[in-house]
Structures are given as structure tokens and as C-alpha cells.
Amino acid sequence: MKRWPRLLVFVGAGGVGKTTLAAAAGWLSARDGARTLVMTFDPSHRLRQTLGVGAEAALSEIPVAGAPGGRLRASLLDARTTFDRLVERYAPDAAARDRILGNRFYRTFSGSLAGVLEYMAVERLFEVRAAERYDRIVLDTPPTREALDFLGAPRRIVEFLDSGIVRLAFRSWFDDSGRPRLTRRLGPLGRRVEAGLDEIVGVDLLRDMVEFFRAFGPLYEGFRARAAEVERLLREPETGFLLVAGPGEERIPETLYFARRLREHGCHLAGVLVNRLHPPLESAGPWPPLLAFLSRRDGEGFRLLAERLGEIPLGGLPLLGDEPAHLAGIERVAGELETALAGLG
Amino acid sequence: MSKGVIAALANGLVFVTGKGGVGKSAVAAALSLALAEAGRRTLLLGIDPRENLHEWLGVAPSGGERLAIAPGLVLESLRPRLLIDREVETRMPIRLLARQLLAHPLYHQFVDGAPGLEELVVLAYVERCLHGEFDVVVLDGAASGHALGQLLAPALVAEAVRGGPFARLAARLRGLVSDPRRCRTVLVTTAEEMPAAETFELAEELTAAIGVPAALLVINQLAPDDLPVARAGEAAPLVLWRRRLARQQRERERLRSGWSGAVTELPWLPLPRGAALAHALAEWLAAAPEAPA
Ligand SMILES: Nc1ncnc2c1ncn2[C@@H]1O[C@H](COP(=O)(O)OP(=O)(O)OP(=O)(O)O)[C@@H](O)[C@H]1O
Ligand SMILES: [Mg+2]
Image 1 (tube, rainbow over the protein chains, first blue to last red):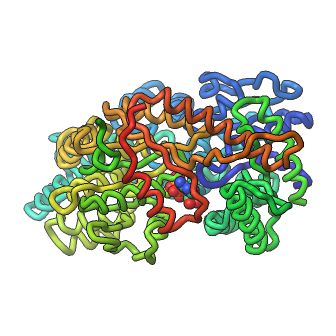
Image 2 (spheres, rainbow over the protein chains, first blue to last red):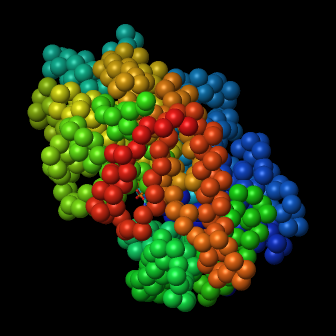
């Protein structure tokens, strides 16, 4: 990787070391003089542990003590906190804000609504980018079921906002007695439909959901505008993706799938990094049988992946004796990462 | 005298979870093989859209159909979405209406967006399977964060939804996941610093969420300590391996001493993902006593 992008996004399956490598990249970037922010969405708060910042990093960007030049900051994302903040910031008035924050649907689900974490990642990214306090942002993507769900989050939100469900919410669905209006107008047939709906989801639930969407009304326009911006941002030439993969042949299909999805999205894939490779064993041994097995597995896997990736640059990082759990260890990983990135060309 | 690990997990829902890549699917496959071998009617249920459990059992993917693997062992890869559609079809009073509803974009948006819906549907399916058809359902759960969502969904929905069938279903399923005789969580980890730390975090959150501690901790992928005594000028890979083994030992001790429930260990075997590995791990589990830490 010759030129570092302004926004560097780490993607990959869970447990391959994205968070650690993102921290290491932030460290390198700060060392080279760029004001850098590392953002992570790891709910286990691993980065917090690694960078030695406290829970306050969920609320603001915290300087990382001991990082080179004092130029590294870290921020953790918590879906609930970001969501609340968003509502507070963009609600047109106090009444609108309180209506959302007080909705039982919102209270229970704002942290766990499908896609909320991914979407919040995108919102927060936008917020930080717009403030222009940093020369570079390193983003560690959230562990999603489908590891690239994150990419589609802005578009899904926009589609959702443009969809009928929201417009429907603005129609008056329920009459004053709290009965669904549409089905009532249909007479006896309507009552059967209503009974069917009630049987499946429950009319009360529908009423709460409609109320929730309605309370959200004033925020829609802003959501849409920002989501479109972020979508653009993810495709900019100034944004680069690094795909982190685990070693071994078994992981290759998943890695190729991610690479393809990134390309389909129009994202710039700076390279693939295979993390935690067991060392090659040059001499005949004797070696512990498990070490010999893993060394062969990782060597073969790497060779095959290089073949299958074609033009896409590929690098590898060795398994370290000590897993970096603290900043001291990060320096060592950063060294390995620098070598691997230089190899990406 | 404690009974074996397998006997302690012999009925109800066995929910296998842990950090990404630590061996959840390996353990779920091995557990279900061992349970079936012990004579329990076992369903191994996968919900991962990547669908890889068949590889662990040495069969071809079935595209959603149930597969009979061995006497007493059935494998199924569940697509929660299809279950929801089927439910609507059977419940809607008018067939034509049901079909129109299923084809409507609004329906898709609702189903995609409704929080907790997929989770509830999966648990409802498990509940149904346990109703006479199977003694035990082993669920190869998603990684940590989503696993918590899976077990929390009934409580959340029960709390947020007033009345109606959803609320009733959620309340019933909350009863299932918080009943230690009908639902048992198996946490899988490796003896490495990050996964171990995350395991303790997850264990705590789980207990807080459903009020029941995990039934079993599996320390997976333990490398055998078979190195000769260290010599000066040793080859670099050996030095590294020694270092890893020392780390592993430290984390293993930390896990064992910090864990108050049952623990079992599985070796790191020099085998690729597949049926041979699953069977080898199943034999270990079948022989494992349920050892309190
Ligand atoms: N005891 C073991 N011995 C040897 N290899 C193992 C063992 N346990 C797991 N593995 C290997 O580790 C890798 C990950 O295992 P597995 O797929 O079961 O993890 P997982 O937790 O289900 O991952 P994911 O979070 O991606 O679903 C596989 O390649 C598997 O073969
Ligand atoms: Mg798995």
C-alpha cells in the first residue's frame, strides 16, 4: 500500500484479528505524523483494553496514552448511546425528542434493532468525518452475521425510509377507539382480516410500531441525506479497504466472497491480509506434529489464496508468541503490519 | 461422583456459543454425534447463513431439507425467513390474502426489520422439535453478540409488546430459555487471552440476561505440550511454539480458576475440518467427566 487512504476500513470475519490490526494501523499512522482516530464497534470492548482507554470512549474520542506524538485517539461505538445522541441532536424540538425517547418500542429495541449497530457505525463515521478534526480515520467494522452487512447499511436505511412502511405510518391507521381503520371500513371481511392480523402479530404491537415510526418522522430527511453521503464516502478513492482473513485453505471461499462483495459495492480494496500464519518449517525437523500440520496448512492456504486472488494484492502476518493485549504489544504488531503493507505494492 | 458431560446435556435445548472462530460448530457437531451415540434422539440445528455443518458430518448440503446422519441424529440448516413465511401461510384466514401479503414489499420490510422476530421463530421451532420428536436439540448459535440477542429476544419482546400472540409466544419462550432443565448454554473458548476475556464477559451477560449460568465451558484447541526440554540456539519456530504453549497454559489456568461451573477440554488435533475431526472430538466428549473447576 503505497499511499495511505484518509479513511482505512478493516473488514473480515469474526475472530481474525481486525480490531488488533486496526489499532496497529492507527499506531503507524500516528507515528508518521497524521492526526488519527481509530473507531471500533467491537461490543466486547477489546480495543478499549488494547488501547487502555476507559468506558468514556463510548461518548467521545479519547487520546491514547503513550501513542506516538500524542496524535492517536480512540472511539468506541455503542449503538444505544449513538442512537440517543442522534435523536437528541436532530429532533426538531424537545417534545419530538421526548416522544421518541419515551416510546416503549424505542426504549427496548434501540440497542438491538436489526441493523442498528451497522447503521450507527455509519452515522458516527459521518459525524466524525464532517468535523474534520483528523487527517485519518481507521475503522474497525462491527462483527455482523454477514460480515459485510455494514456496507449495505446506509442503502438499506434509505430504501426503508423511501418505502411504504414509513408513509403508511403517517396515515391514520387507528380510529379514536383504537381499532384499525382500514379493516373496519371493509365490514365483516375487514373483521376477519383484523382477526388474522391480530392472530399473527397482535394489533397492539402494530399500534406501537406505527407510533414509533411516526415519532421518528421529523428525523427522516436528515437520515436520508447523511446515508447517501456515507454511501458516497465508502466508494471514494480516498477510502481504502483492507480485508483480514484467517489462515488455511478452509477460509478461502469466505475471503473470496468478501473480496467480490467489496468490488460489487464499488469499494477500493487495498489488499487482503492473512493474519496469524504459523511459521514455515525449513529444515526436516523433528517438529511437534501439530506445529508441522499447521505450518503446512497455512503455507498451502496462502499459496492457493494468492492464485485465486489474481490481481488483488495479498500480504501475510506471522503468528506472534505473545498476543498483543496492550499497547506495548501493538507496537510489535504494527511492525509486522508495516512490513505486510509494504509488500502489498 | 460426577456424571459425564454428555449425560448432563442429554435433553432440552443445548445452545452452543462463543467468540468467532473458536470452534462452536466443531463442538456442536461433536456434541450431537456423542449424544446420538448415547442413544438420545438428537437434532443438530444450524442457523448460520454460511451453512457449513454438513461438512462436519461428511454429507452434501441439502438446501434446507432435514438430513438423517446416523441412527438418532438429524441435521437441519434452518432459514428463519422461510419459517416465518410458512407460519403466515397457515395462519392467515384467507389463502389469497396470505399469498398477496407474502408477495408485498411491505411484508418483507416488516419481517426484515422487526426486532427479535427471527430469534423468536428459531426458539419456537426448537420448542416444537422438543415436543416428542427429539430428546435434545443442539443449536450451533451465532458468535457472542448475536448469541446474546438470541437468548434475550423473548424477554425483550415480552416486555415491549402488550398482549397478543407475540407477547404470549415471547413469554412462553422466555420460560424455555430461563429454565435450567430445558435450556443449557455451552460456552466454547480457546486458551488465548482475548477469547478467554471475552468468554468471561459473555458468561456474565448471559447470566444477567436469562438468570441462568452457562452449563458447560469447553476449552477447545489445546495444543499438546510435547516439546523436549528447551535448548540454547533452538530453531525460531520452536521458540515461538514454546512461547505459545506457555501462554496457553497460563490462560488455561486462568479460565479454570475463574470459572465456577463445569469445564471440559478438547485437544487441538492435526486434522482439517470434517467428519474425522468431529468424530474424534465426539469420542473425547463421550469420555469426559463433568469436571467442576
Ligand atoms: N479441537 C480442534 N482441533 C482441530 N481443529 C479445530 C478444533 N476445533 C476447531 N478447529 C478448527 O478451527 C476452525 C474453526 O472452527 P469452527 O468452524 O468450528 O469455529 P466456529 O466458532 O464455528 O466459527 P464461526 O464463528 O466462524 O462460526 C476450523 O477450521 C476447525 O477445523
Ligand atoms: Mg460456526
